[in-house]
Figure 1 (cartoon, rainbow, N blue to C red):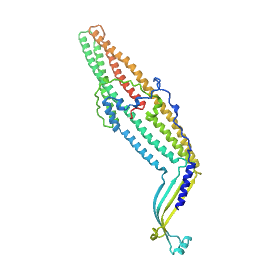
Figure 2: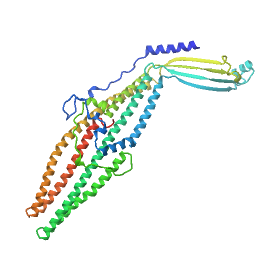
Figure 3: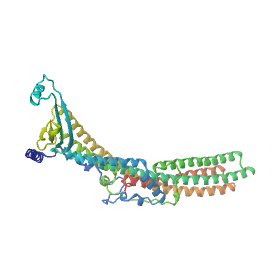
Figure 4: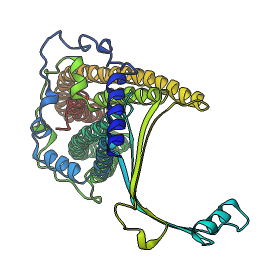
Length: 472
């Protein structure tokens, strides 16, 4: 029996060696999916990028680092992604056993009572003088499929791509969480600054109202001036609870991101004390595939689709399967373990070609090819989105800096205008409306200036995320 097994296994290995080939050709990642450079960026061959900087070095404010640390450690979505990676790891590990024969142990016992008038019953009675037959077996069975067409190899490739893809999904999620935490923190600083501006403006309105009341007592203005001044003061006062409300809502949003119940968030610096950094190292577009997780994930999806095409194409070809069974068998329990008399063995090998279900198998192959074409298009689309996001962030960084320059000059001019208006009004050389208008304009401009600075920090964060930073 050993010689028979050796011959069959040798035959299978020979068939596998001679026939084994790649039944489908993989589609490579399209190189023309990337432009030569980003829009709004100077032409450069420098491959360095701020995305290579770890987020703990990109964000220098200790409060942001503390919040992001908490988010990375406690965010529930990230923990779910970790579990998905664990599941994908199990699947990949299991796929490695595709080439290993399946071995099963068995113990069987049966009894049969054929009819006395049946051929089996008559022969049984004549042969052993009994009306029933017993059968006892114990042994092992083996089944092994030769990977002639690379089906099992492609299953491993697909599982490995799925495992790597789950890691990239987690990285992409982390980049978004890091960016959202930093955006939320800068938004808090802006709201704090706007709240201070509203309170300062309210005090300024109080001072102006008192002056107008003195003018009214002197008969220099009417009650209309007092009413309009009071209305202006109430407008500033109304901003305070609105901003306090927005601060609480933003703190609650940060709490969700950091995996904690709603609470206040520590801010040890003011928005005005922070300096906007202008990061110019962006690298080249083709580097996005290695730095940006969602682009890498799209590339891995194409690899998984290639593997699936190989699997479905292999199903169209014959399958070589070898089976073997051996152990102990006896009609009587007393002789069951009588060795070598009770030993038995069987080995078989054969090729199986799908016939009646060939149409269904070919349909699955055609679907896999179409899915692969979709994966190519999805990769191209993901690259378009990534490049567009980088270009958007670049133009924001540039234009917001210019807007801030003009707005600073505007605020400076309005601050001087208020001083002049108050001085002229006290001396009866300006109308009260000029004073109120100057104060309203200053309030609006200072609020806009705080928002512009917040937008600059957000634009830098968006550029960092768009380039693939935040997961290291």
